Amino acid sequence: MKTIDRRRFLQQALVGAGVLAAPWAQPLEMVLGETGKKLSAADRVTLGRTGITATRLAIGSGTRGTYKSSNQTKLGKDKFVGIIRHGFERGITFWDMADNYGSHPLYREALKYIPRDKVVILTKSFTRDAEGMQKDIERFRVELGSDMLDILLLHCLTDDNWTEKMKATMDVVSEAREKGILRAYGVSCHSLGALKAAAGNPWAEVILARINHAGVLMDAAPEAVIPVLRQAYENGKSILGMKIVGEGRLKDQIDLSLNFVLGQGFFDAITVGFESTGELDEMMKKIELVRV
Image 1: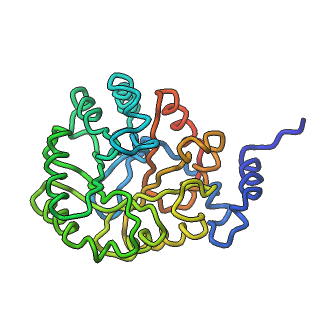
Image 2 (image 1 turned 180 degrees about the horizontal axis):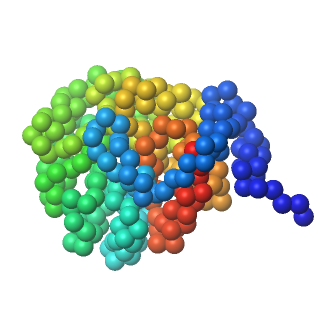
Image 3 (image 1 turned 30 degrees about the vertical axis):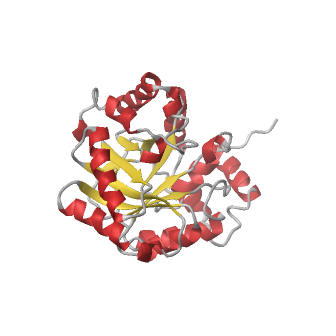
């Protein structure tokens, strides 16, 4: 059987998926890497204009996360904390959690073994009103055993008009930073309208967006999402990617997804939920194969 190199294989696969043929996509040299720059999951990257430096890969905890539960929390304390500690030993110091996943206690347990000042904590609040947000911020600090939250996101926004309806809530978050409780804030979106609002609104410093080459579990198809995120990036926002593996639906296409996402050139970091140290190790190896 005739063999083909990895670059040609990825090119053929992306063309077959309709990715490279789309007018919104980056040129092939960008998506597959013409310069040959090597990436690492443990690379230190600056998140937009926040001044926060984190690793390119974040250890997430929200695979099928809802109602205070997720695949990660179901692993139990010892197993998931073991994954976090394994990641730290390999240089991964960015943690992605949320109240809705019920994962705060697991990360707090990890902080018994890992110095707080060595990690970046990102968490999310599902609260929509100002009073609830104030309570959430205080509760999160207790649950995590940390006076400081590095990044706080308004979680799972779907309303196109959230920037108007949630002004009072946003003010509470802004005031928390003024008090030194937060370092940065932003949103995670679950609709294209909400994402467009975040891209154009100066308040949102960090945007966590669903993205992969196949459009699985995204706010809209890649051709609709990519231009919005690129504009947000040009507006100075930090763009973080989630659903890279589509909650496992794309586990046999991780190479394609990583090359597509990281090849865009504007994602500061990505978050992935792992259920074993082996999955984490595999992702780190695959990121090292990406060239941008």
